[in-house]
Image 1 (cartoon, one colour):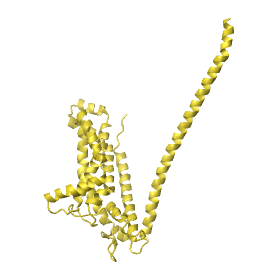
Image 2 (image 1 turned 90 degrees about the vertical axis):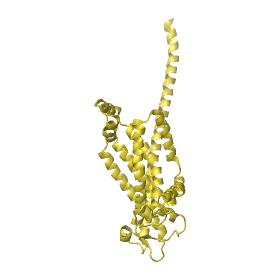
Image 3 (image 1 turned 180 degrees about the horizontal axis):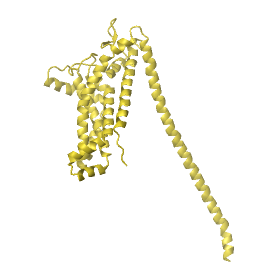
Image 4 (image 1 turned 30 degrees about the horizontal axis):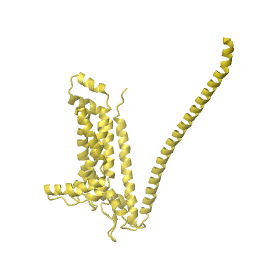
Length: 324
């Protein structure tokens, strides 16, 4: 009798097993289809970013070539001259070094403020600060990074500049120092956050080894942790420098619009991005040499940042440390 019952139940069991297998096959096919969709979506995003980058390079290159087709422009004058007077009637000059000088001056002032202050703050947060202090300071730094740059520009113009003029009479209303300080405040959270992440990524075994050899916390930080995190710290520095070079609104509001070669931080200067903002305001014709000069400046800025990125990658690979 038991054999008869088992024979009766076997078709039912086989049907249930068959349904279960079919359901698993459907689920597996759905999972594979979803994975293929995600894979194609990722490929599409990558191709889209390449398309955007290629389009930007194409536009900059083509418009820069159009700029050099004007009779008033020569490659020698553009690369070797220090006079930038594109709006000066019949005596126009397009010496890019006048704009590069203002850009480098503002960037140097900003980095003198942001790099050491950001690194010291990162070391404190990573190695010295209690957990409660660290959890409080990190959001504050993130708030600084989220403030719009136009706010920093008005802060530089309305607060930093009057303070500098109160300290010394040699500062103009628009000057490189106030713009550089504001850009430094803007870049400070970037340096601090990325450098602190690089320090936190150092294995704790290195710290324990330094303490086991009798080193103090300061010795472990300076002689062990900083060299181990040097690659990440350099990346943070380079990212901050690139952001300072490409900053627009702060320098457009606080640095001024006088393009000339100077090392005096109290003088009015014009940066490359500041000039592009001035021309993009619509005060010149879209078919004139002044308009196309904006693309030549943008292409030069692109080459500078690209060179900086390539140099940074080489330096980062040279000092990279790998731990198991």
